[in-house]
Amino acid sequence: MANHIAIFDTTLRDGEQSPGISLNMHEKLEIARQLENLGVDVIEAGFPISSKGDFEAVRAVAREVRKPVIAALARAVKKDIDRAWEALHEAARPRIHTFIATSDIHMKYKLRMEPEEVIKRAVEAVSYAKSLGSQVEFSPEDGSRTRPEFLYMILEEVIKAGADVINIPDTVGYSTPDEFGAIIRGIRENVKGIDNVVISVHCHNDLGMAVANSLAAVANGAGQVECTINGLGERAGNAALEEVVMALRTRRDYYQFDTGIVTEQIYRTSTLVTSLTGVLIQPNKAIVGANAFAHESGIHQHGMLANRQTYEIMTPESIGLKKSQMILGKHSGRHAFEERLAELGYSDLTQEEINEAFEKFKDLADKKKYVMDSDIEALMSTKLVQIPEALQLEYFHTTSGNSLISSSTVRISREGELIEEAACGDGPVDAIFHAIERATGLEIKLVDYQIRAITSGKDALGEGIVKIEKNGRKYVGRGISTDIIEASAKAYINAINKMLYDITEFPNGKQDNIEVV
Image (cartoon, rainbow, N blue to C red; front, side, top):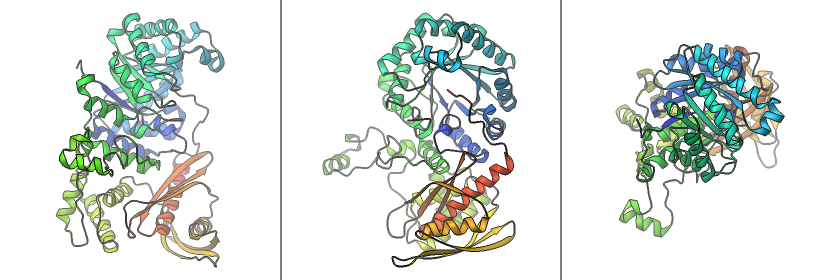
């Protein structure tokens, strides 16, 4: 469609390259399924050559997620392309995304190649990828800082070699909207064969202009925008999918373009990615932040009561939020709970999953007077992705006080064996972490620890988020409970379980020296 902008989501590739994020295969697959529900056109599932784990994740997504195009990244190197195709070949609509740097600074200092060599390498990569039967996308890395005449030349050659999509990355977030729009316009006017391919853009947010640059590109002829959920990505991140999509929808009068995104799935997708990555978003984040639809000023509240459009240019319902929450309690029945799950977007659950969620809901309702939507979403997010639980917390006890040395005793189940250990620490959380370490017999490096209240009130559900590191790879664990010590312990064990699973399944780890767009 002439007025359709394709949405290319790279949360599973560029988003996972954010410092501290490490998703396992099951988590990537769960996000990919939700991206399919969201209606994205393309899912970039990973970089198969980078590790066995990434390869398996791309292959799993290619096998199970059928509606979107499934893309895999590959340098302009035959072994990368072969590995990408091996992971992708079962996809309904596979795409190999190959790239090579084209700016003078990258060619001179990183590639140490002459421009003619770069063109030759790019053409060979595109031609070879095309011969495998895949769609092919080509990216001139650092495209926004590439000399225009060289950029036009290499794009013409890869189009002749069979590229289907030409992606222009603002790799270091250097460009400005007027400048980036002019780059896209220049490509349209000067590159032979450009009308036969899709122009895509991939903007980073180093100067806070990734979304603005992407929209400027759309206004100047780009037909695909590459973005991530919550704007995740290297350094300052990528263009945020939710911001690009809602800008195009809200200002259709200006842009006159549509996407195929089911915007009512935006909030659920955002919370799922937040949960699995452990990266929280700031309250004032556009579209999905906690304050995005909050109004505290008296003047604003008066206007809202008179007419919502006085201060809301889009509705919370349009991204999947409800104007008012249904509050459930311990007397609420299964039917009301199932209805609420459906309203929150969990309409594709099996009966077994609903039964398990209902039991968890009842347990929570016995501890809390009211169960809010955010409580239910937290319960669901802990059950969405299952990995083998080598370790389980059976029992814990802590003692702490301002004149006492904090101590903790834990009982851990490991493959049917019960192990009980005790330890002291600087506070109850430190003590229980030390006790867990002694019970597991593992040396664990704690990188980050956070605790937050999911809802308000003294009976709020607490969420613990823990990041640990082993062999240079980070693992994010998450636990929830009305007891913040228990939430912390669950998060720590969840992270250790992910580490143990990763070491068992993929003992060779990642190749950290791989260069990426």
